[in-house]
Image 1: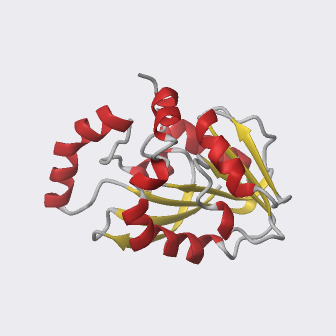
Image 2: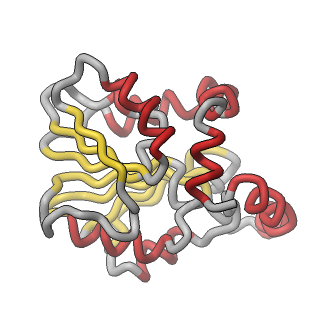
Length: 199
């Protein structure tokens, strides 16, 4: 089953599956790191639109996702917000002009994109020179025990939902030509991290 097919299928239960972590961590991080953004914001992998309520009403938000069914849920969350536009699009091949956005955002997305470096190169292309790429992601830990467990369970999570829990995301960000300006550990030691970078 393809990534698109899996996320179309999971779209109906996606919010329910994420509910424990949403209550414990995610909603707090969304508010802390997204509510102050301004200008033009591109969100890669908008999913069911969980981030949308946190963006300021005076920002111009463009969300893309590869799953039509996920976008249908996001459109419900975007109702009444004329500053939000949603598009069906592949993160590895984005149909926007260079240097278009002040911010490019992902939250828990780089684990499931087939070629994360290609997607990150697109983020770098689209982010203005004075802009910022913000990635809130889970990734391979620097802790030997935790990273070993991630390696053990990665085939399971990949098989079920195409989610790679042991990706070296900071290395991938650098491979894409982005300059990392901040790394902040958020939870489970360093599994969940905020990474800020510049084109």
